[in-house]
Image (cartoon, rainbow, N blue to C red; front, side, top):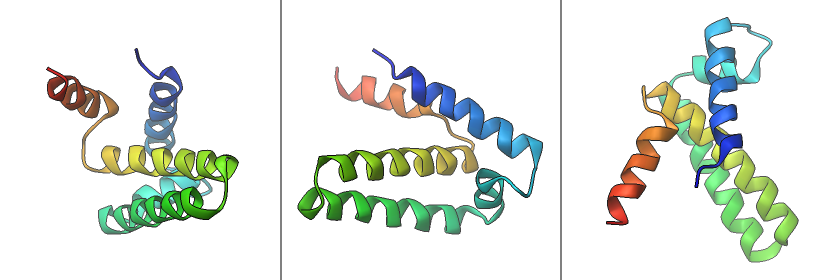
Amino acid sequence: MTCQVLEKLEGVIRRRIAEGNPQSYTYRLYSSGIPAVARKVGEEAVEVAVAALSEGRERVVAEAADLLYHLLVLLNSLGLSLADVCGELERRMK
């Protein structure tokens, strides 16, 4: 089973980066470089953990969505894709 919304989001991220619009948060984040994007992924991961411990289900879902978005930007920054990650997960299930 695939998560089509993640595939769509990955396409939106690619388009926004390609467009190079400085008004786009995605483009600005990507342009800040891999270390900055990686730090943002770390921040979002911590926010998911904090939400899981004390902020309730809705907050966990919101923070997890933020984490997935930022992770997709990081993957794109590294020349990787959701398909690369899915392939690794499939390999591990064998």
